Image 1: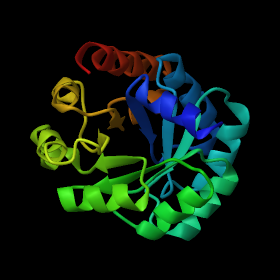
Image 2: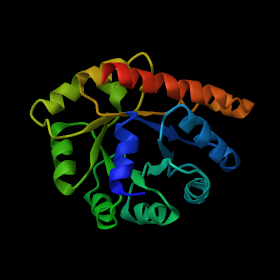
Image 3: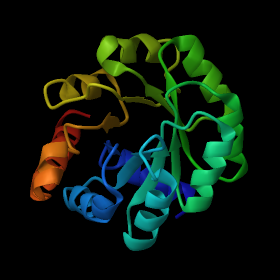
Length: 212
């Protein structure tokens, strides 16, 4: 998938679903259920057991979804997930070596930031997006606080995002949201009720359509 296609799958629906700590056997079904709700960018965190193999399996078995890797802390992990098929890399912090690795191999990257300094550092190093993390610690006002002096920085709030605050983040200027357990419900997955994931994804996409 081209960089432009990955960007489109993030920005058009406005949601990245974050998959963490699930059993690899159900990963394809989880991804398909989320995609059925209109979310076409899905991040599998690198600290999930067997994450590299899971990314490879899902990338090979699910079409038309940008599969990314999250919680990437170093360039070695970035390269491993790229080779496994990750089409997006997401970090919790600013690591310019990871940004460089992603740029070298044309993989879009969302770099974790909290402050204007970090946002500018990440953007100037080549980050495609800045992941405002943890978003729940600062709230929607941090979006406008950063975008005031730095309107060129595309921000994706992540961490504690729910249906209760999603609209406010979009109204503040977020280009997309990173959403974890509010979509990827562990109890629903354990019960095999994947339709709950589809419904949750649809709800977030609807919020994006209305408030962005």
